[in-house]
Length: 65
Length: 532
Image (tube, rainbow over all chains, first blue to last red; front, side, top):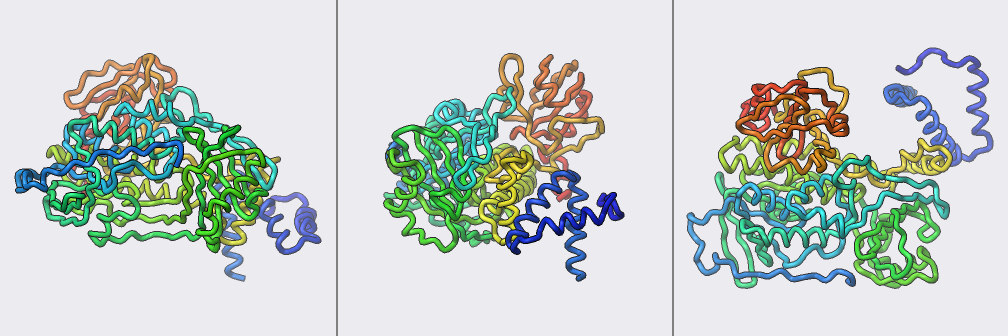
């Protein structure tokens, strides 16, 4: 099950850490960075159903935008 | 070509040309068109069941070029029934080590050493011409098999209860009738074309160059896969070792490469020189430029004409699923066809050849397409993830599992086949369920695969089983590995099909249940055809 409510103790810190990590990278480097990050996090999560749910949720919100 | 000497197998003037075998009285039970890997294997399977076979092939020698070089365990187990797998293992290269490189640096090593306690290794590398040679020699020694070389099928006329093939030979053309015709005539299948049957699928435009060379000095023992190597910086290169000190070097090129230019000896040599260094010496064996397609026929059975192997479905070469898939096809087909021919099963049993092997072909296409997409990403995000997996692999072991240069061909799963009896007891925590291939294990100082015949077999573990009238019984005693692999307790019983797939299993030996499952697995249960 994908966590839909807050699961982070310090959400502002984590959010900004992710954004700041992209600072100074070209678009192409951002894509390479994100791909690494997604693979690392997906392996850490481990739960295939949750990963698939997250993929669907990300795509849905993209299509709605 | 250097190391392999091509023999020419004898052409004999067919008796039909002299009118000796014309007329209805000489209808053959089965014609097999094509003597690649599937055709002769099917011939041996049919002959082992007492069926006389005629094999027609347009050439008179084995595969030109090494082509399908990776022979999987499940294929070796089929060929072992005819006594030829031992010499394939002996002649071939059994390797389990490999290394993946990114640019000029090794990223990680892998070891594919299979679990111990199997008669055969996970696979051996052996050129297709050797496989075919051993198959031909074995077929020629079988009195029930007639190998007709330089016999080219130029016409096929299907009828409701038989087929007439028109065959061209150096001495003229003749007609031959058969109850069944099995087309094992390869990806360009002339039989499929003559019947006007479609072959839908996907075409890939990337090009590959195979250079088989014999390296005359130090030989790498392991498989190597390079992404963006200095000697081919924009793409990937795969290196495999084969018998006779032959190496296969497989260079990937984009869709725009000039194949005729790339295959010129001086251009191939230039790349090999960069790859193996200034002191290396080699001889060329075979060079081939290829692209590939993934295709599958809608139906593999068209009345009395049946398709198998590359003629019925074709995949990319990643994962060795072409030759091994073809052998698995005829392993599935042979016993069913023999039962139908003997009047012991309805023709509808052959529908399950189509349903089971189409499901297998779909699994093979899925696996090989995933490998293809990893090796040749088709859009920028795909490439970004591929490169991310490669970049992480050195320091993060999990990412090594994502690197997909071809997944080893293992027996496909056939879930929900109408021939299977689903598990009734819910307390299985392992073992092959119905629809999965049986597993080998050491038994009584030998191997379980050696205890299986050409027919259905019942395996029982530590129970007082009574012999059954229609099916041989193999009782397995105190064999820890076999018990573990079959999740066995005293009384555990498996029904194994002639193609070594599990049809049913139980926690206790019940002759009535075995008989019912046997009837269902041989297509006698009428729900077999309606279930589809």
